[in-house]
Amino acid sequence: MNKITVIVFFIILLFTSAVNAQLEDRLNLLDESEVKNYARPLVTTFTSGMSAGAFNTADVPRFFGFSIGVKAMFVFIPDDQKSFTPNLPEGYVIDKDAPTIYGQKTGVTYLGGGSNPPIVYPGGITEPTSIPIAFPQVTLSLYGTELLLRYVPLTIEDEDFTLFGAGLKHSVSQYIPLFPIDVAVQVLYNKLELSDIVDASHMAYGLIVSKSFALLTVYGGVQYETSSFDFSYEYTNENSGESRDIKVEIEGDNDMRGVLGLAFKLPFLVINADYSLGAQNVLSTGISLQF
Amino acid sequence: MKTKLLVITAVFSLALSGCILDSLETINQNLPISREIVIDNQPISEFTRTFVFDLNTSDTYQDYENDIKKIEYTSLSFRTTELNIPALEGDLEVEVLYGGETTVFTKRIKPEDYKTTPLVFSLPAAEVAKINEYLAGPNGGRAFTVNVTLNNLTPSSGMLTLRGYFDAVFNFEAEI
Image 1 (tube, chains in turn blue, yellow):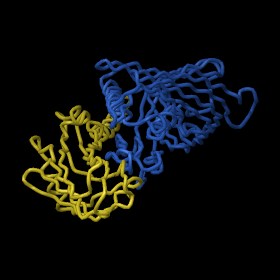
Image 2 (cartoon, each protein chain N blue to C red):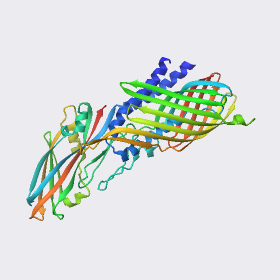
Image 3 (tube, each protein chain N blue to C red):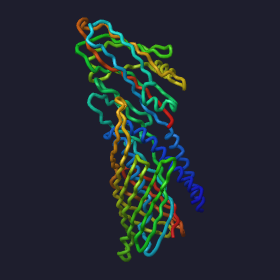
Image 4 (cartoon, helix red, strand yellow):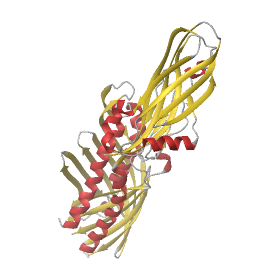
């Protein structure tokens, strides 16, 4: 792995470790019901990012194929996922929305009458238009079936980050002689663990089609994607000072995704880009060495 | 070709991650501090109570004290938790003393109303600026003395039990 690639991976890890520190400070203010509203867009981003970059063609080598490369993508965050209406007990004045993890950095406070003390909601970590994600990817093909692998294990300052992904793509069109386009089906699984605070898993099921024209391949597909994040953190009631451990499971807003892209294939090198529409849209690019 | 493409990827990620990493280095959080005011079964007259909002008494403030880059005033409000005379009305004067400055709120109130909705004290922008100037800097002030006066009460006789809270909210930005 050359020096530049190491720099790219280090930057990704820095972002993840910093998010971990920020996430714990913010989740500490929220109880179970509200942490779902606050963090759901992040779960959706994870799902959207993990679903993207999984294919750039429906053509699977009949005998043997191998590729290694990097996938990079922007996950676009819509404005309606940057805030939410809080679930507050009776007696509070809800005069503004609360930021999600992607909302304004300034937190908000809700005031109540009577015995209702102020309730503090945390600000967002950042207010992005898009979130960049990148990871390495390896594929191995045998007899019309492709195995996809993603694996990033890192430890920095006692913080453990692990991304593991595996997928299977199978050519359907290989059974239909002279079929004009390539058709394949794919199932994809990803798992992400971030120290002892996040344990996430993702599944995607896809139908892929593609057509090659000399060096250019046009590809597209539809995917059904689901994900689940388990957050574990300590919740502290700001007014009573009482703390308790909370473990909450959050599902992303993801459902169906449609993908359309182009791949440029040189001998031993493939460059691709695609755009997908889903709960959060994704612009994905990839560079891979292919044999 | 391969090296050039990897350089482009690295610069791309570096530029974007740099922007995001800047925002990840700080936390912005609201800090509420509450002080209770108690009038416990006393003959109705003029009442005066004094208390101190001291940020140093907040556990959250202590957690971030050494890393705070900015701290500002957000709001001051009052809520009633107990009142034995629902029809009680009176003139409320709240005098906030800090660093040689004084900010005064006055309002004719009916405490019964604040059992369901808080009384939020509105401050002119110039007053907010004075408070924030007091809070600013590594040696900024952290304590506010509050003198609360309730007078011209109706009914003007009887025994009064009134409990409530003054809630001050501050906003701070700290490095993490």
